[in-house]
Structure formats: C-alpha cells, structure tokens
Image 1 (cartoon, rainbow, N blue to C red):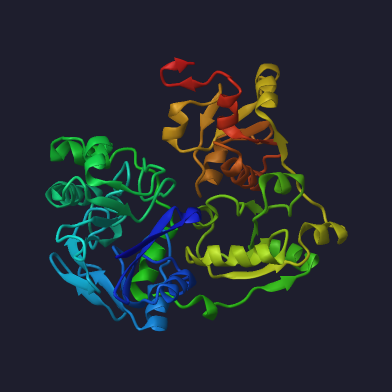
Image 2 (image 1 turned 90 degrees about the horizontal axis):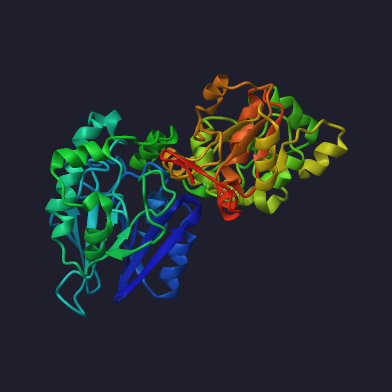
Length: 466
C-alpha cells in the first residue's frame, strides 16, 4: 500500500492519497488539486475515488474538479445531501483500491454526515492498519459539535452523537490502529488540537482529554461550553462543497490598478487587503487597509474577518505574492478579488498619496510603557484559552474576530493602545481593524506574548502573577 499525507499549514488541513496496484483514492482534497494528480502520475496510479469525510466548513474542496479531470467517483456519507453526482455510503460499505479495503463507518457529531475510513492493507494483514477520522477525532481533541445548527441540530444533540461515534465506534478499534485526522493545530474545527498530525487509537485513549472516561452528560457539557465563535464563512463553504466548486481556472482574474484608482475605490466600500508582513504594513500602508499577512494562517483569517461577498483589492510586494494570495483566498471561497495595487506601496507613495502607519514596539518597550504610561491600553487578541494561560500585566482579552470593531467601542480611541498576540501576526490584523475605528495611537507588539515570556517578564493568570 502507498500512503501519503499532504499537510497545508495555512489551513491546518490534512488530505491523503492511498494507492495500491495502479489504483488510488484521495481523501479530503484541498481546492487546488495539482499535487494529487502529479503524485498519482509519479506512482502510476489512476485515481478511482475522491472521498469526503464530511461537508468541510473551513475550506472549499476540489472534489469536483479532481473528479472531472481524472474520472474518479466522488464519495460522501449518505447524510450529506450533496447535489453533485456522487456515491452515498454508510456503515459497513467498502471501497477497494487495488488490494486495500476502505471500510466506511458513520461517525456523526462534528457534522451529521461525518464518516471515518478504516484502511486495511490485505497484502500485509486482514486487520485494520489506520483510520482516517476527518473532523470527528483529532490528535488531542475532537470535532466541535456546534457547526450544524443551521440544519436543525442543536450543539447538544451533535455532542451526544459525537460521544456515541467515539465510544461506540472509533474507540473499539485496536490500540495499534493509526489515526489520521483532517486538521491539525490552529484549525477552528477544534479547541485543543495537537501539533502532531498523526497518532494511534491507544495514544488518544490515554492522552486525549475528550476521550477520558466520563458519563455522556458530562461529555456533552464539556463539548458545548466555552466554544469559540464559528467564523461566518463556515456555512458558506459547506454549501459550496455540497454543490461542488468551479475549477480555479474558471475564476475571474483581478486587474492591475493604478494607485489613484485604488484610492477612489477605497471610498466605495471595497476591502483593501494588505498581505505583507506586519513590519512592512506598519511602515506604511493604504489608509483603512486590513493587514492579514501571507506568512501565517492567511486564508482562515481572511475568511473570518472579510465578508464572503466583499469586493477585494490586494496590496502585495510583488505580482508573485498576488498570485499566491489569489490561490489561498480561493481555498476558503473568496473569489471576488477585483484588482491589485500595481507597483505596490512604492507606486502609492510615488503618486503622492498619504500613507498610514502602525508603530511596532518590542516587548521591552511595552514593559517600559506599562511602567511609564498609566493611560496605556493593552489588548490581547489571542483566544481566551491562550489568554488564560498567561498574559502581559494589564492586558485585556479581546479575541481577534469580525466583531472586533463592535468591541472597540468599549475602549478609548484617543488613548495609546498596544495590541499583542502570540507573535505579532494576529495583533497586526487587529491593529488594522482598530485603525478603521478611529484608533490613532496604535502600537503592535512584535514577538508578542511568546517574546514577553522568553524575556522572563512576569505574566498574569487567573491564579495571580507569575
């Protein structure tokens, strides 16, 4: 058996190719599919199946294009209600790829249609070797149960299904069975996902907090408490995946725009999306621009912060970076990029247009300001669990989200405001949103809380200062 995991850090997304005797299956493909086709050609496989473990909410899948280009059959769980041509499968159904058996088990809980794929390499053994768990079982976590509410299920109902799927099905597999999920650390589909991208049933039984022995009622309460807000684009992407997305080659191309044309469109409710680093953005940017750098989980954050139908103008340091941004935006369903600033910020400045700035400060400078400026506001834009684990003194928890603009009303835009996250990426995005709300004395903390802790500075927790 041939087996390969493809891991896309930008979306914390894992997809898979399984092959045997000239046949292959691709499981949970990302939208841009060339790597699967190239890998299959190298290994002399014909892709026979494209399998989706569920209707992914955090990215747009390439199952439609992959099937069209290879002749493969698309496979969904029978509860998916997919409207494109596909095979609907349920408990016990088997798909064969050469001498490999792919057995389906229905594992609802993250979504109603979720399935897991038990993989048996009959050339080696008649016993299962691995299980592809989609978003049902992660490494160190399980899928959140609150993303199917729009389809008539409460989060409590879904959490109950999840408990049954885990204890009644997945945990009945042997401890030696390898576990390969669809997401890793950073995905919004879970709360505490490990940085590891594979494990075993036995390891998860011992170390996964959500699999600890507990009554079903306790599990439901645990899974439905303190859930992070679901990004608005999740329901949009799930609907796209149900019908199938167009190929990337069919999407309209953005046009190169002169600086003064961009300046006029800023006043017409376009979103100027600056994909450069926090440092470059801070040194000078189009006033009102949103900064989400290509160096981090770019697609997830743009999906979370920018409405899906928004008209976007990109600012990047090169046309190559524009192309990269287009592909990564399409992965989450953002297809409405109208143009990009030709020549980048140099062209903006050469046109004599005013730039905005955000001051970048080190953690040592933040520490000094905390001592010298009682009026300083410090906003920590990490997730609540990160904040609770330790934060800079006086920092207030204001998680980065599309609602940050609404929350900004709780603070004084006239006061100096330092924005901090784990490393300076999310805080730059947050600072750009705060600037749109009239904050003018913004300070982005480079290195973030990680640098603060590494410098040996004291942190506050719910238990006190350490």
